[in-house]
Image 1 (cartoon, rainbow, N blue to C red):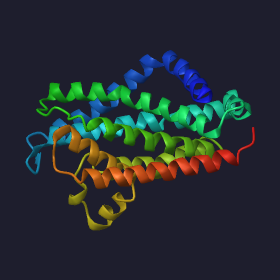
Image 2 (cartoon, rainbow, N blue to C red):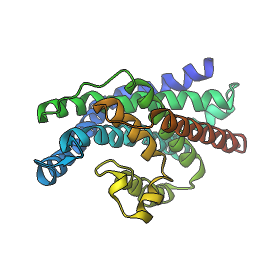
Image 3 (tube, rainbow, N blue to C red):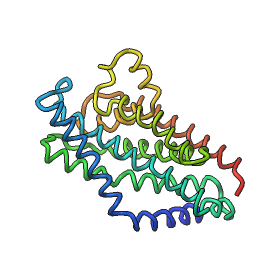
Image 4 (cartoon, one colour):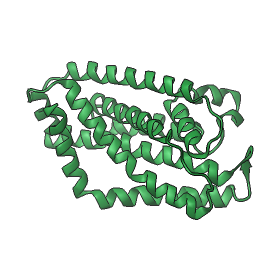
Length: 245
């Protein structure tokens, strides 16, 4: 467990030095989306029996927390390419799984920063629902998945250009096609099938169901999400075992 503590301690020290920047980044982007979609497009609209603002807020939570947890990929890249900190992790007498776990916990902590901010936005905007306790496992599995995805991408890419390509061709489409702003079942058939390839479709459904109480296949979505997390952890372990300091 010392490896987990060491990795987490280093990352938390870095986060502490950037905490105000992270809070600002977590505040501005969802506010703009709320103004553009919630008031610009969705004012006086509804999704089924749910007002659009109530529908949108859980999507913004999923999107912004995903960006923060997946964003550890940039931190790892900087550690690898410039400061060589990641090489020191590999040289240390700790298990590869400890390094991964420490980074995942860091990703979870980063991802939790925007949740309270967006909920405050929601209540100011008129959201009437109170999240249930099921939001805790929903957020945890969501943040675990995207922290692991961030680790896998960061360890596999060769430069920052490759990182931007992944963001452009995977992360951005996933944000807009995973039910964040619009219901997946209202999309064209091809897009609907594509959306179900993305893990965010399942985790957004979990978060939305736990925030506004709409019916969702909670156990099915959680089971699929847990399977995705397990596969991503296995991929990260395979990559790590093949790396040389």
